[in-house]
View 1 (tube, helix red, strand yellow):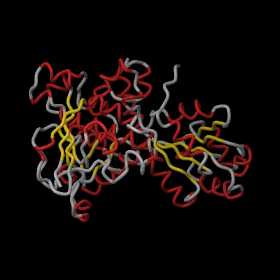
View 2 (tube, chains in turn orange, red):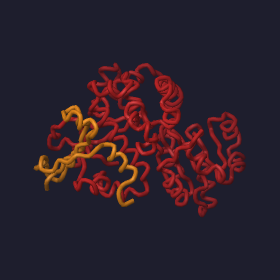
View 3 (cartoon, helix red, strand yellow):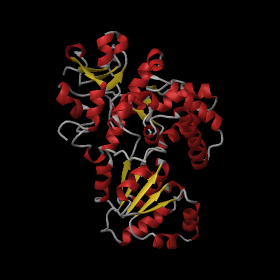
View 4 (cartoon, chains in turn cyan, brown):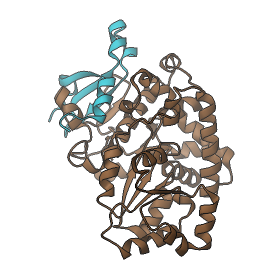
Length: 59
Length: 347
């Protein structure tokens, strides 16, 4: 089973300086086998993520 | 003072319809009393054991005290009157059909767990109210949350007097909770441990190393870590291993409930200072994990169907946006964690 990698970023900063510094953190989605981390990296602004923590979709 | 609504309000009200008694725990100053007064002021009598006359009344005449407060009552700071659990059990058993009759609050898990285990098992619903979540903070102040913290009083005063507030908070915590409740004499070393932990937020907890640096035994560090956990200053997250035994044996990671405390203890006063320093990654990781922790406590009753649909926490939250699965760890580096060294986000 492939894994997915989600990086939480500050989109505002990323637009200005797309460097390592702008990557604020990440969440690794570990599956049964850690075999294909790089095939599904996606980005999400951490503020959107925190907003959804309180109001998960569908609840 | 204006009241900011909490996400936990519906959960608290629901628990009051499910259990004869409800316990609301959480760190000092997380808004427990304020929230309960706001929600139940008209229906419940409010009794706090911070008031020495109430404590003396209960000590002198516990049956008379319970008779005086025979209706719906909020008992605040019950850790100061641990014997009340026995009398609550008697009162509840006399009228098991009455739900939400008592609401108890306290800032130490120790008193509750002991009291509930011995007296109120099966009769009480447990909830935690942690400091504000991101979405509970007014929008203009949200960007300051990671450095300035989430405590309601600070947010309400727009973080004015931040340094003084945290100094006072930590001093009160040490004197009133640690010294009096846990009967701990050596506060100087305990404070040193707290500062060392702040510098190691979101890292593996190495008790031997901490014992060497503080100059106490490993068992003492273990005991002090338990106190910090029970009083909602820090929490531990076990590592993810496919082998269940390893999950238990391997070192957990340590996080603070509030990143404002980390920044205060490490001298970080603003976001620029944080971003330029070595703690930027760990504090950010701690920030995200603590927000997930807060969310899980708020959604307690819905755990199985929303956030905690499985033991892997975030799937329902993020799946609708990014079509991914099985969350496990979080860190600042771009480099993926080595196999089997991932920390599950699950409680």
